[in-house]
Length: 84
Image 1 (cartoon, rainbow, N blue to C red):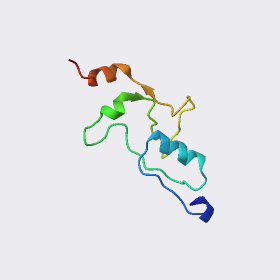
Image 2: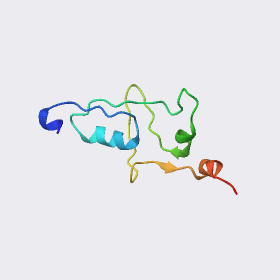
Image 3: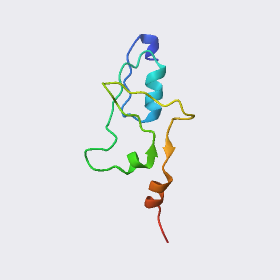
Image 4: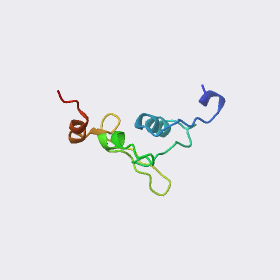
C-alpha cells in the first residue's frame, strides 16, 4: 500500500525478517540496526543464533543461506534449557 502511494517504509527492529523486507522493496530506504550485544547487557538472543548481520561502513549484508540465514547455536541453547 505504501509503495502504491510512493511512501517510504522503515521497519522497526533489525530482525532478519525485516532485513529481507528492506532488501526486497524499493520504498524501504533504511532499517533500524542494533549491535550484536545490547548495551543493556541482555545478550541471550544474540548468542542463541549464529549469522547475525554486522553493520560495516553504514551498510548491512544479509546471508544467502536458506531461510532467514540464522543458524541455531545448540551449545548456547543447552545452557538455557530447563533441567529437571
